[in-house]
Amino acid sequence: MATQTKPILHGYFRSSCSWRVRIAFALKGVEYDQLPVNLIKDGGQQLTEEYKALNPMQQVPAVEIDGTTLSQSLAVIQYIDETRPGPRLLPADPKARAQVRMISDLIASGIQPLQNLYVIQKIGAEKMQWSQHFIDRGFQELHSENTLFYTADDEHRISMADICLVPQVYNAERFKVDVGKYPTIKRLNEALLEIEAFQVSHPSRQPDTPDDLRA
Image (cartoon, rainbow, N blue to C red; front, side, top):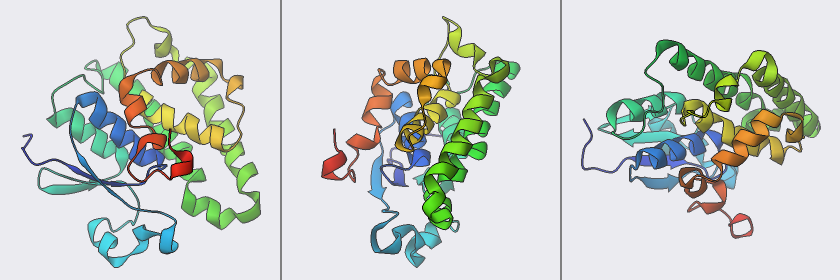
């Protein structure tokens, strides 16, 4: 199903949803082009009619791939996994696959949306406390009942759950959450950031990264 035309990622350097897709492309070894969408400049380029025609939700990312346009990062990641060769991003075993989806959904639906740009703009002056509260609540759930038990396995392979976790830890650090309270999350994040796919996709190394944030 893969074609010779490069996918096009419409995203923002610091968007965790965009970062997830960049990680997936990197892990699969897929070359792609980027068309940055600045979520702040001119009131937000995602709010233009031109971008709305591409993604009616006016969010990033949007990915043009194989003659269609996909949004919602988890849907994009699973499409990439199903159509491109390379390491599997979801396990073959149904129980392990459900576990990965559970962790991914907990982050992508239960934590990240509550501190994305649109929400914290509505919250106003209390945005830091708001974000810390919901990140802490989500991280407590990840740590409870061995939700991340599979990370201790020497046979652990990178999955969609890892792809979701690293950008969320980045956000946690931006909002001054003490990640040290969650040793499993901290350890896993540090290990993943040693992997090239997570480094090349990092917000500090994107075409639209501001000079003062560039690594």
